[in-house]
Image (cartoon, rainbow, N blue to C red):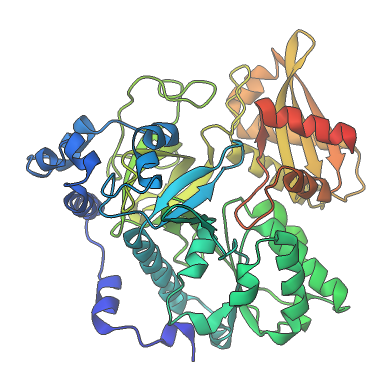
Length: 507
């Protein structure tokens, strides 16, 4: 039986397949639903949710009553109470699960509340994405009845005082709906393993026993595991052991730097499906085959969205908010402009600055691409270099030189009396670092006008250091960040940059 042929209850299916109307009205419905649910919480009472609900303009009143929050302000003022076991803080009831997230730049773990309502909304988004596969051309239907191999965090969650904590992927795997369990791999025993290296080894050992149609996970870990399977069983490619593999569901990091190397591990073409699943919720998903990387925002479920133009008026050079910027609703945004994304969720994240930047590629379809992080960009002297610029430059260089660079990171450094960008490239290509520097610089001149201007003045040099790919993973391991949701940061700053330099000097 195919996964998209499962007997889903008619009422549930009708709700899922309900055509979306005007996105502004859909979002207003979501906001009202969230406010009604949380009106009697401590947060709802403090910020007058009843007044908001009875106002003539709910969205406007909501913005007036509730301030913008980042993680620290929400946690210090509210979420810490829920972590201590207090009910009805920002969402009704006690919080049973917390997703642990350190992002890619902060040392301390963040505790993100996860509720049944949030998980239910995530599952609806996942089912919608599954059902969208019916519209794919040349769909290998047979693959839909095969296993789904998820490279997720451990389902053996940390036990707190009245709650469980762990990776969102581990929480999701632990709470996987019963109808999906027959498809779920690597199975409960391996999924519980906390040691990431042992988990990968166990997956490699069990690989011949499975018939995999889907793989889900961060590209770097998927690539490493497939290489290990091919090497251990002396295969030509992964399709020798999993002939029905037809889909790779990825997210969390731009896939393009990995794609060329990844495809050398395949015996035939597969479908790449992008998702945007943050610890705070299922934000967006690719719902059509040829969307040019665009993902559809989850409009009508469990998230209310606002957008802050990502510019010098609203953010300083460290990526911190300036003052109290105006936010835009989904009907007010423009295509091809960078926005910082703000959510209110069915887990009590109210006007929460997510930390990611996006741009709309097709406003009529509510389709977006992730362009970076508000903290992960370089603007030493006004060059305003985004992760999107960096990814594109690496992609263009790889295409021109016929090489692959699956890992990289960049740091802004002093250079005499001026400044430079130092690129660390993870590649096995036998190519001169000076040529790579020249080509990256050329591409960025074309991609970013501000960069081109600053290269003529205070941004004096582009330095490239080539490294083996495994150095990036070794650094993550040293930092205790091996795992399903951990990615190497594309921009290094502050203490993390010092740690990276020390690691390289010692290795």
